[in-house]
Length: 63
Image 1 (cartoon, helix red, strand yellow):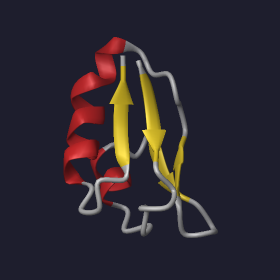
Image 2: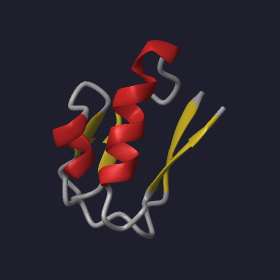
Image 3: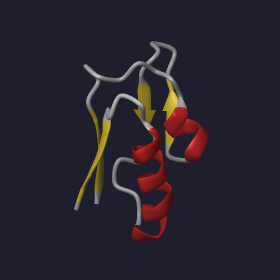
C-alpha cells in the first residue's frame, strides 16, 4: 500500500492532517507531506478517511 499526493491539486487545507496527523502534515511550503508513504495495513481506515476528506482530491492510495 502506498499513499500518493498530486501536488498540482493540493491546496494545503490540512483536512488530511486533521484526520490522520501521524501520516500527514502540511509543510512550510503549504503542501501536504506524507510522513509514511508505505504505511502498514492497520492504518488503512485512517488513510481512507484522510483521502475522503480532501476537498480537492489530491490524495490517492495504491495497493
